[in-house]
Image 1 (cartoon, rainbow, N blue to C red):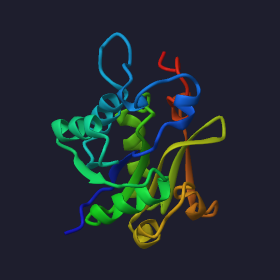
Image 2: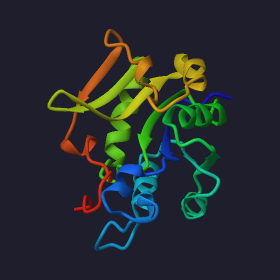
Image 3: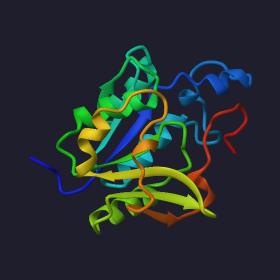
Image 4: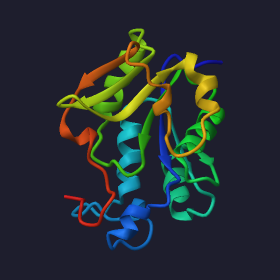
Length: 191
């Protein structure tokens, strides 16, 4: 049975090469967010769950701590050997085929809130085929696709994600705050 709403698909299978190149060590998703002692991935999962939408997380089989956070939070876990975002999206969509759409977000964007995910979902519920948040006209995350993109999303590969599927004639852009651009690609970014 298809759900009435889209779900949040968290991509957490990347290797974090820019983070490591900037002097980071270990998996950036496990970096502390500072004062509250939660990790990057815990914060991302928590905000996705607060949206009250279905949530699934795609990660690598060997990212045991990331897997544990997802399991503890009760979100659907999808394992994917590839760190490429195309393969991660394809694996996630294949395992969540009952969803009515997919709100794709990155596991290293802990400043996105439940409200960000809900805004994209609302656009999809109002008939948008595609929706994405922007800040000052610059594309950001998350990006949403409705159910008619299921097959195309399942067939993605490489590291370009779903970028090739975006169609400016169909894409609804939603202006938001600067957090739609903030991620943890280099050390010292958590503020």
